[in-house]
Every structure is written in C-alpha cells, then in structure tokens.
Length: 531
Image (cartoon, rainbow, N blue to C red):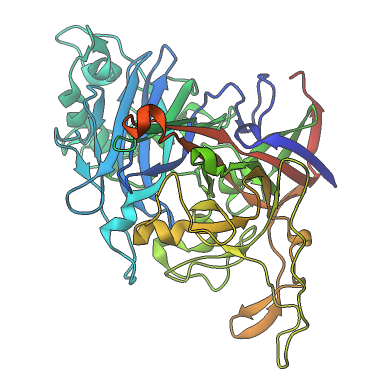
C-alpha cells in the first residue's frame, strides 16, 4: 500500500517523456481539458478559454454539463486554426437558465448565434427537478477530435481534401466557416461518411476526409474565470489537461474515429477504440501505470488519473475583512458509474462510487476535519449508543451527492456566506451546497474519501431489497487498485474591505487555489521518472 501527497491538478502527472498511457500533464497542455466549475448563478458569469498552441488545424468537441448528474446542456464542434484562441461566456439567460455567448470568430458547427445559445434540459429525465435553473451551474469538457490538412488547393481542386483551410485564419478571420458547416450539412462529404447515401464516399462513421495521416494531438490549454460584475470580484483557474488520451499505438484509422457529427454526444471521457486503456500517475518520483479491465477501459483510466483519498486546502473566515470560503469538488466521470446509458437507473452503482442515481441524487460518504493555524482541531462530540431497534454498522458520515459540489465553510452557529452563491443561494445552488462549520476563523481542512477511515464501518444499505454490507471508494484495475474517488477542483477565498474611503469604494478581492490531495494505491507497473 502506497500513499503520497500531491496537488489535485497534477494528481496524475508524469514527466514529459513519451507515454502510450494517458496522464495529467504537469505542463497544463493536452488532448482533453476539464474545467471543474462554471456558474451563471447569483450574478456570476464564467469565461471559458481554450488555446491551440500547435501548428495543426484541430477539431475539438466542447461540452457543457450541468452539476447534478452531468446531463449535457449544450455541445458543439469547434474548429481551431493553428495557434488559435477561442473564448466564450456562460451567463444567465432571460428564460432562467444558462446560455453561451461569444464574439469570437473561430468556426463552430453549428454556428453560435449573435445573441448566444440558451442551455437546454432536453436530456434531463422526467424528474421533479428538471427546471432550466439547474443549468446555471456545472462544468465543461473539451476533447480533441482530430487534426486536418489546411493548404489552399487550386480553384479547380477539391477543397474537401484540405478542410482545415476553411477554418484557418487570414488577417484574423477564418477563411470560410460556412465551408466547414457544408461538410456536415446533408450532402456534404463528412455527412455522407457518417450517414452514408453516396456511393462515391465511403461510410466510415465519422468525418475523416482531410485528416492528417498520423495523430498529432495535444497542445491545448484552457482556463476559466468566474466573474461577479456587481460585486467587483473574479477568480480564475486552469483547466486540468489530460495528454495521450488517444493511444499512441492507435492506427490512423482508429484515430479518425473521434471526429463525430456535431449533433452527437460523443466523443466522451468513456472513449472508444482509439483511446488509451491505461493511465500513468506520479508517485514519489516514480511513474506508476495502471491498466484497466475489459468493459470500460478508457473511463476507468481517466478515473484513475483523478483518484484521491483526501482533498486538502485552506479556509479563511476572518471577520475583520469579510473572509469567505467555498471549495469546489467535481467528479468528472461519476455519471458513467451511477447511471446506465439513456438515463436508466442502475440496480447498484459501479465502483468506485457507492450509490446509483435515483433521479435526484447519488450520495457517497466522506469525513471532514478542520484545523486552525495552530494545529488545534475540535474535540468530537460524545456519540451515545443507539436506541433499539437499529441497523448495526449503519454509516453515520455526511454525504456528497452530485457531480460538481460546493462546500461552504462558516463559523459555528453563523449563517453560511458563500463567495460563489452569497447568503441566499438559488434552489439549484442550494442542492449543490454543503455547509462545513468550524469554530476557527482561519485554518485548513481535509475531506477524506478513504473507505477504511470512514465512520460506521461496515456500511450497510439495501441493495435490491436486501440489507447488504457494501465496500466501495476503490477503483480496481487489472494490475492494482486506487482508493478514494476521482475528484478535481479548487477553493475560492474572498475578502471584502467595506472601510475603504469610508465604505464608498467597492473593494472586493478573491482568489482560487488548487486542492492538495493524497493518494493511496496498491500494485501498478512502475518505472523511474526523470521528472
């Protein structure tokens, strides 16, 4: 059993040497970007940026997912020129949900209207909680789908063989975004490759004509900025970057299998035949590789990158300058373990998660422990023996229940003041929010997901009508195990100075800090890293 401390953003980081396995790139560039949180709640806006640092024209999928169970609220194909930058804003729509707006000229399919595109609850199951307000909070995935030729051919030539030319910028403007859309429109080359109907164009299932013959992925980086214009405060964070998501041993034909039709929900973190089935993490100077079992190998490999048993960070509640603290904890792969395809309920969740989605929540126990800055921690209250009858061993820990979660720290006995959601959160925000009380104004804390450290062991629950002891919070790979849950995130610490110029000057400040974590693993294949 091995345990090490690391920052959450580099929880899977390895040296920059070549790997056939996926890994979290400590240089913050990659083929997949995960933005742990967006919000258009409480007057907030979230700016999402993605940059192509390479010389290759790229196609990427941009996916916006709501916070409770990662239902997609919008996605689109984005086409980045070499060295291109694309930015958009998520803000409140007049219909009560979120919407995406952009003034960027980079090509998207479909094209984003000038007034933006509102988010949808079309994929929400028939649940009580299916209002558009639920789309105000969530997270973002960006997945690279391919690289394409971009040379201009003669006027009499076939531009479809060099489609990257359409979205390559000339004097700051793409050459022809409509040309990209026509490739996907009915009768277009990529359309026929996906849907057939033209004997002269081979049906391949994805749009691969004009792609580079070899995969040249990576080099994407991203950032998110949450801004509250009324409060005059903002926080920024870096997207977590996964590199070698596409297996370096995949054939060119396999690699083309990622460029999906714009209306398709794929590609996803579940991957396909082109994506890697093993993950390399960094453990005390050693690269440790875990290979997934048959079934959902890419999904398990992504989860392995993010598996942590503790999340640690500071909190600041200092009343003299209005200190407030939220922690964002997001489980990017959770939905694919707790809900079957198409929103069907599972009879039980798949490891490492405990509970299946029940149309409202999917909950996992955790512990939280707070310290002040002088090593003090509260003495636990006396726990009396239970009255009879009772369920022996029933878990008594608190629960974390959604894909993206907010922990708001507050002084004991005081009303919660969230830097993200304020003192009166919306119904959507309130569901995501857990309040952590502390007797101290400032300090640090940890959230523990390690199953063996949780209270009330062994945990018992009803599984298919029978009271059964269950064990979870462990991901089993073919050559080892990783404890905890697959989490990413950061803290948001805000301050306010209402005495500046007698209170007449708005003086609010905020900062985001990546979580620090620990990881416990067993097994895996090791090789010495030079990083």
